[in-house]
Image 1 (spheres, one colour):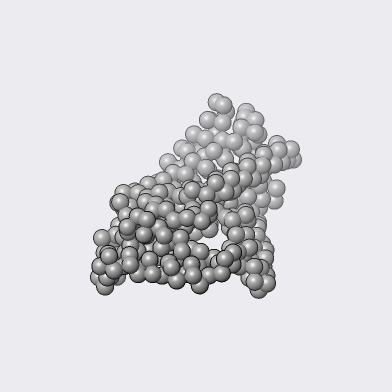
Image 2 (cartoon, rainbow, N blue to C red):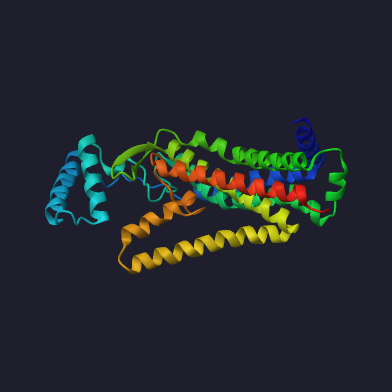
Length: 328
C-alpha cells in the first residue's frame, strides 16, 4: 500500500508543478461555464401555463380522452403509445394534477418560466457529457500510456517498486483526476435543480413524479460509469499496444462497433414491425444502456451499471497481468 501511495503522490506532485496546465484548465472550465450561460439565458423563457385551460376543464378533457382511448383500443392489442397515454391520463386524474404542473421530460433543457435553473442544469450536462468521456480516455493515456511513447517507462520501473504497485498507483491517480473533474463540473449544478418535477414513465408501466435533482443525479451516475468503462478500455488497449494513439483509436473503435451493431439490430426490429423489441434492446447493450436509461426506479439500470463496473475491473486485471509480464 505504501508503494502505491508513493507512486500516486509522485504523479500528484508532477501535476502541481505544472502550474500552466492547472491555470489553463481553470480558465477553460470557467470560460465554458460563462459561454454556456450566455447562450442559454440569451433565449427568452416561455410559460407553459399561459394558454392552459382551467384545472377543472383540463381534468374533464383527460377523463373524456381516457374513456375514448379505452373504448377504441381492442382488448390485448393496445399499442405502446396508447398505453402510455392511458396511464398518463389516469395519473393526472388520480393526483388531480395537469400537464403544465410538470417540466417537459422530452426537452429537459427547455427554458421554462420559473424553471430556468433546472433547464440550465441539464443544458450544462449536455455540453459536458461527451467531452468528459473523451477526457476519461485522455487522462489514462497521459498518465500511463505516454510513458511508453516517451520511453520513460524504463526509468519508472527502475525504482524499487513492484510493477503491480506502479500500475495501481498510476491507475488510481488517473481515476482520482477523472472523478475530481467530474465533481468540479457537476456538483455545483445540483444547486440549480430546485423543487421542479418531471413526469417519468417507468418500465413497469406507470407514471411517477421525479424531482429534477434525482433525474439529474441518475444521469450523472450513468455518465460516471461510462467514464470508468472508457478509461479501463483505454488502459488495457494502451498496455497491450504500448501506443498512446492506438489506445485512443481502439477505444473509439470499440464504442463505434457496439453502436453500429445496436443500430443494425434496432433498425431490423423496427422494419419487421417489432417496435417494442426495438425500444427494449437499447437497455441491454454495453455503453448504449448507460446513455438511454431514464427510469431511476428500474433495477435493470443498476444491474447494467454493475456489469459495466465488472467489465472495467476485468480489463484492469488483464492490463496489470500484461504489464507485470512485459519485457521492457
